[in-house]
Amino acid sequence: MLASDQEDNRCDGEQRRSPATQGLPLGQNVSATSPRKRWITKPFVRLLATNMAFGFSVSCFYLLPKHLTVSYAATPGMVGAVTGVFGLVCVLLVPWLGRAVNRIGLARTIFASQLLMAASSLGFVLTSGVGLPMLILRALQGIATAGIMTAGVAMVCELAPSDRLGQAMGLAGAASLMMNALAPAIAEPIGARFGFTWVFALSSLAAAVGALAASGLPSTARRLDPSPSLSVPRRARPILAALAVTGAGFYVAISFLAPLALGRNVEAVRGFFIAYTISALTIRLGGGNLTDRLGLRRTAVFGMLAYGTFIVGIAGVGRLTLVPLGIGFGLAHGVLFPALMALLFEGAEPGERAKLAAFSNGVMNLGMFSVLGFGQLANHAGLPVVFVATGAMVAFAAWLFAPAPEAEDSRLVPFQSETE
View 1 (cartoon, rainbow, N blue to C red):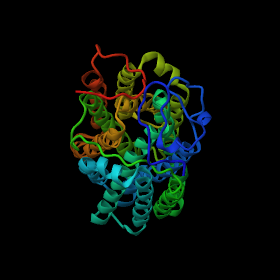
View 2 (spheres, rainbow, N blue to C red; view 1 turned 180 degrees about the vertical axis):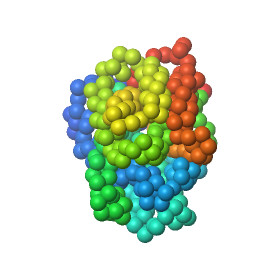
View 3 (cartoon, helix red, strand yellow; view 1 turned 90 degrees about the horizontal axis):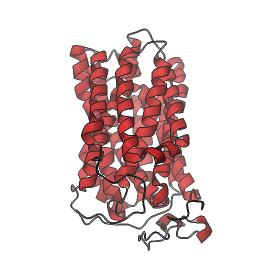
View 4 (cartoon, rainbow, N blue to C red; view 1 turned 120 degrees about the vertical axis):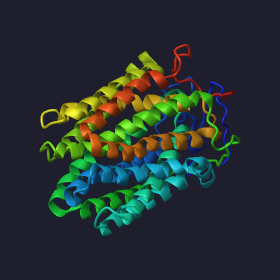
């Protein structure tokens, strides 16, 4: 392995070396003041591969609401319950997840989470309707997702230099994001022709491949965060609040798009996912200069306004608007989430990264849990009302939760200790 259990975590502006790159020659490491040096190393590429595999596995279940609606005539409330239990488990894990990941180790957590995802996805082959077994399997998938998201984000911080953290977050997210298009494009025709049993098996196979890739990730020094498990740095609170609200917007769109489209005689929704993914990837991979010019805080504010606007627009989805809405939703998504995540980890101490990653995953899944309530609202008021209400909430949150205007411009700087 390239890792060392002894690590210099000082970021003094000269050079920051992660545990996963200490064994590499100096020419392959990164410097806070020398961005031209190569920093995308073999361990980082392997992490991207694990993200892609897990992203494919999870994205297969974006079609679960359609399967429940078509196969079992599930109501929006039932769809919300199956989606919401996933988020509930992730939220309940937050108080313990950060410290558990630090104790177990980042690589081991990612490997175990991939195996759990593979097993729980395969379990769906045996389900025959909405009931307790399906809810338990979704809960297990929630545990797996919480583990890999927490450890994966923390490992990005280990492998990437501080001045490239925003770009690294974008690449790591893009690796799984591209699967949002590929998985539905492959799984939807398979499910339509052979049945969703094969979609669940395909999801399980992808997670198993991810576990194989994760088995070669570098180990990292185990750290303990000395602060209380539920303490959150003051600077992180508005960012976590913004992540919770935008997470609710994302999961409402993903969960209720297919039922709304089916009600309007739009049988295939993969066009939305393909358009969303391509546009999000385009802005993530090519929009770094835009973020640099605006600053992370302004990028997040504009991203939330645009995100909310396109979620409202989904209320009018139809055959002709499916792809344009996917493009706009993807552009806003590709700008917003890397900016919020980079803001969250800017200046974070190494020992608190796993805890912040756990909190970020928890609050976004709190947004997923909110789908349970939105499903009940849809039963009474209709799905268009849900999209309008959620989109308005996301747009309004741009002003409620963005960092204060008098704060310093949020450009990436070397990690430094934060005192409150």
